[in-house]
Length: 201
Image (cartoon, rainbow, N blue to C red; front, side):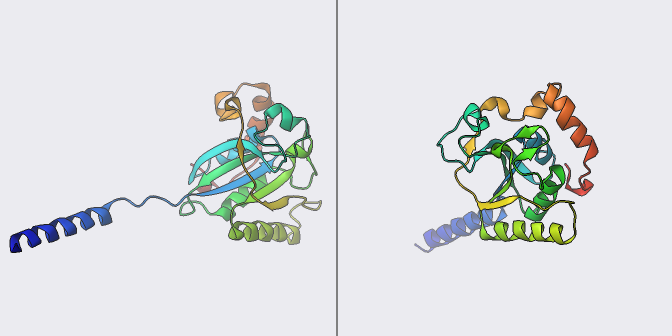
């Protein structure tokens, strides 16, 4: 009986020891940003350290499971967005906000360049109260610093249901670097806009 108890205790400690030595899984978080065509926004966020996944999709509308054609009609109320899954131990939400405001014009209402319509509005969909507070604080900071000539019109809203866009929209710049939009819009923008080197992969 004594030997049996010793054996059970040995197995218990060995099991716990193994569990304590197992690598800790990162606690990933989600963030959503809309700043014009999601092809362009996706291309920037995919370059960041600590970003696990970037998915193009639709958020903020009234139609369930909308298609690209429905969203681009402007009648569903959705914005083209990217949903960013990131590790806050590697990159902070505030860093994502910094990049977001650097890669688009947050002062043009329902428009980014030649992309016009509510589907191209500047919007941040937040998943926690902390994210919402950080987004509003960032807008306040940029406004007080007069970072832009015109007022910031970026909306900050609690995240509604996210609908993943069609497969051909995912990883668009990586898969289609020679497509006209990629060559004429995204590539020059990536060359022009400087992101802090320590944030890049």
